[in-house]
Amino acid sequence: MKIAASIIGAGGYTGLELIKLLINHPIFELVSIYGTEYHEELSTLYPSFKKILSMPVLQTNIQSIVQSSKAVFLALPHQKAMEYIKILSKYEIKIIDLSADYRLSLNQYEAFYTRHLDAENLNNAIYGLPEYNRSLIAKSNLIANPGCYPTASLLAILPFIPYLDNTQTLYIDAKSGVSGAGKKLVHASHFVNINENLFAYSPITHRHSPEIDEQITKITKTSIKILFVPHLIPLTRGMLVSIYARLKEIINPLEILQQHYKEENFIRICDHCVKIKNVVGTHFCDIYAKNDGKDLFITASIDNLLRGASSQAVANANLMCGLEETLGLPKIAYVP
Image (tube, rainbow, N blue to C red; front, side):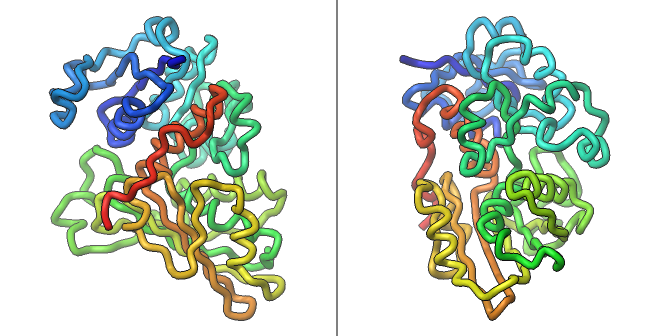
């Protein structure tokens, strides 16, 4: 039996990835696509769909969505998403939100983003990291789909939290491809600025820092100081996170990772440093760790548009709808 699904926000990079995933999904049937700016044929917006998928990009209509769909994906910027979710949540429909609007506590959201328009639903949203919230996701109607930086950082660090000296700072050095900045034209992502260049931005004060911090505390019941520094690198897509921490005791980090993630289909524990090329185009998260006495180094890599956004959203939708979590998730890397 097919499950009807819609997408709000077809014009962005994550919206495009969602379309690709859903039209190839064995159960979900993409019945409608909505745009906030584009109201035309999909193949006009994305010529790569010509002779593959003929579908109009409609102006968003809540009644049409709830009448035609069992699940809706919102690939919208923060603040815009909650405007729709505040209304959609009143209906029996599964909602997967790719924005930041429901990922943080109210105080932290308003400190790092803007005033929240739907604080009532913050307590109803489940943070969509399947490896840690699988059972809660399966029972939820509203998923706050994690961002790319928090996804890679959390998957890398969470297995080690019980072994860390939490009196010491946890340093996260993260590097992302330019697609993570979205389609909006800004100076930082102009070709002449990013090509053959590498730079940090919003060091220490980046808005994903409190998201990582809150989830570590929530999942492990442990508090540790985070110092998070993101960088932009001259790649279209992909992400590499390097983490530096201090251990309480000497451990075998690869054994801990292997044991912690032994049942996980899309976590790969590597015996050498990970590479972005190995995960681009896939749902995999590759992780490697090494220690020198009590000094610990962890590195993880994901596709920022897939595992850090769209394919994770599909994994969450699978769980919400009672399907096998792995259905329709990409496994083959784009590049050798």
